[in-house]
Length: 190
Ligand SMILES: [Zn+2]
Image (cartoon, rainbow, N blue to C red):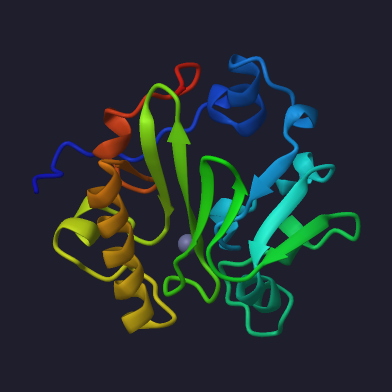
């Protein structure tokens, strides 16, 4: 794929977490549940604003996060707060009807993804970092980082199968092409 048009990402003040929430009329205190896909630092940076919420994390990821095994891309100072109300899950689970956690380890020891069924927009599969780019799924290429390659490939295939079975759309977090066509705040999926 030609990515020759790419320029470095530009992050403006209106792109930060609090500004994005404000643009859709939501305050941090309105958020009651947070599902943590994994503890890489690009997924934990704003936990400090949400310490009142319930945090849902896979058992293996929780154990890893508080072990001495963490690498340089994990910042305990982002999440190691005594007042966090951790809710530890183990395997596939359901937060509520229409919000399913899918255990997708491989990229990280206890990585999880979400399958969200929306009334108007149907099934959205929030892959998190199972695959960084669309090519990871289309061509079954392992993510840039993996702690367990066979598990990472199983997770890629699992999400592809869910997409096929449900007609759902995969939402990738790190694909610079996909972000051009997703609805971004203040637009939303309903
Ligand atoms: Zn990651």
